[in-house]
Length: 335
Length: 270
Image 1 (tube, rainbow over the protein chains, first blue to last red):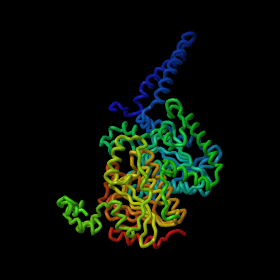
Image 2 (cartoon, rainbow over the protein chains, first blue to last red; image 1 turned 180 degrees about the horizontal axis):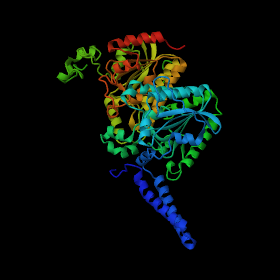
Image 3 (cartoon, helix red, strand yellow; image 1 turned 30 degrees about the vertical axis):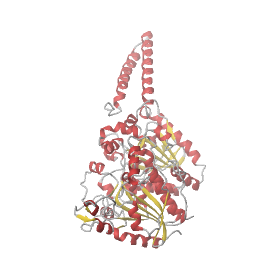
Image 4 (cartoon, rainbow over the protein chains, first blue to last red; image 1 turned 90 degrees about the horizontal axis):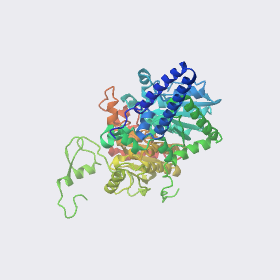
């Protein structure tokens, strides 16, 4: 376990070397003519095959810990990348009407394939200044209170809600505690349970505990193939259990936080396949898959009545762990 | 009877104990008569679920339900089965939530009490199910629900299944709201993380015992995240009251009467 990688770049290293070599060969081929050119093109094809084979084997056999690192990788598409690729006329609405703006959760109405919807999602940053601006996608209470406003508005104007989940956790700062981060998360979930429009939650990267489920009450919960969903960050789990945060890889295994585990446990409804080598290798194709999955579920859900949608969401989360039918409670007092 | 233990000479700790806060030596009998509150510094010591029920609800009114729900180890999580078996053996219960029906001031209520002694009152599938059934019973029968919280948060050994309890219990709160039945939460030491960020914080009325630890982030994460130094009362009942997150701090000896009045005032059903 001491050999567990620290970043996703470790296993992409041979790939980067291979792709550099490919680039050079391509340059040579461009300048060459006749049989020399054919020979080089043949070689390129061979290298590409080797690359694809590496990607296929590697990315189909990632350990839970590698999935964690990949889910956190900064080139992965973020909420705004999906919004830009899949939605038209997105108008971000920023006010929580209580305290102030929050840049870790954004949202607003938009057109999705011509249909009016409300989009809400966590937003990460790539550069240091972006990350700080987004508070590392750790939302403060204002983010959830803004989300509640958007959910309620969606309900009034009959817009289905699409939420994108990608957060390490909700913001644990003193300020967030004093403004009621716990209440904000709980109230946001409660608000989603009250909705009479379809809700679809898509875990696109990190599904980090309460901060994630705060906007995760979907009639359908979808997960990207290389997304994770966990009750606690693996390092935190290892710190509590073994007083050894460096044993995150072991904790990741134990927590069963991969998309495949979530599907097996019945906690996710569908896994959205990612392009070969992960969503960051081909964001356009990744977005296309996300769009297709959302459209498919949206079509199904839009056939349901408002009351049925609310009831369906309740049933989904009420029965999700299989305990509802376990030893039905006796009712000595009668109803 | 601690002092009447057969074939065993009473020891010092049978008759005395030390206050966890001010460290003064207390007479056990006096301490228990004072509802486990230190007579010197008024520190509210943690109560077991049984003790809590005994001092809160009408005598002999409690009917326990769902006591046969047992936690298992759905993820085969390292060391979890052993820990669980240990907690069961120590407590003689299958999980940390005790729930059922009772009366307070002769009015029927659906109740759940969390026992911190059982794996830190952590919320796994069974705890979440019992909280959910408690709230649903309140909604179905048109009676108020009262939940005493005491928990370190979600039970990480059940992974994502534990996280889902936050959603499930929140859904149950929604049922109470739809049914128009009151839900009263009492935060006791400690009320943390996944429990605080789900059913606990969205009760109609939230009471807290004095100086209980109440917060979202555990001490370790919280320290790391502190750019601004936390105030001395950070994550206490007093801090939450000051910020409008709870309704009242109620000393233990007044809690029963306050709950009785609230149940009578908010009534049961529409």
